[in-house]
Amino acid sequence: MAQVEPIKAFNDNYIWAICNTHSPETWVVDPGQSQPVIEFLTTQNRPLSGILITHHHWDHTDGVAELLLQFPDIPVYGPKDSKFTGITHALSPDDTLTIADITFKIVHTPGHTLDHICYVNEQLAFTGDTLFSGGCGRLFEGTAEQMWHSLQSLLKLPDSCQIYCTHEYTLANLAFAHAVEPNNKFLEKHISWCQQQRGQDLPTLPTNMGIERQINPFLRAEHETILDHLPKNFQGPTDTTWQKFANLRLWKDNF
Image 1 (cartoon, rainbow, N blue to C red):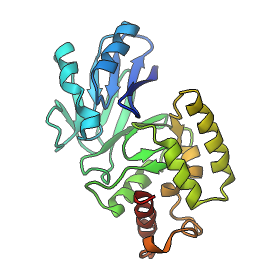
Image 2: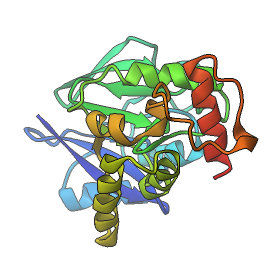
Image 3: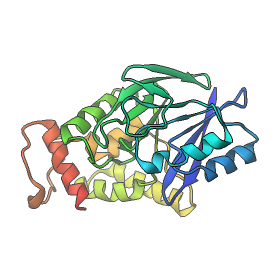
């Protein structure tokens, strides 16, 4: 068994700590800063067993070097052929990895970056900057078609699967989602809950795949009415579902 705890970093990042409930074994996902991790470990009286990286961006990796000074020789798992050079154990699509008594499948999810991977099983998924609550990552390196197919891979997860992404972007994402689907009653209810959470300085995460199927416009691009409110200046081809997704992504980029 394992427990997942949020460690706040920067203004809106979460470094996720995966803690084995039967031992001191502790892993962190995407440590963009080292100090919050060290403070967490010190408070909890736990050592650091290893690091998981989803992609090469600095706000997911800058804490690695300092953590290795504090905890030398721990493994750093991450995507094969990544621009981040601190990975000691490279992972390929469909590899499996067992840490803290949890086995993950490695899913390659290009779009935000070309090297992006997610760590998933049917109970929980660490999705980095691919899938957010109510949104998805910007397309810095990949294409809209790549990102759509990446999201389709994650949509195979069951409704109960807990989604741990790296940023507290939820309210901003849901403001866009409401512009896309102003009559989505489930979305309105979820916005109210998220506002209450943030009003108490509590995370809106993890979300789960069942919620995301109801509120996340980027997972709902196949719905017949999803582009009904799309501004004319963002209208493009809609022959395929990924092209509908691309229209939504362009609108969000300029929202």
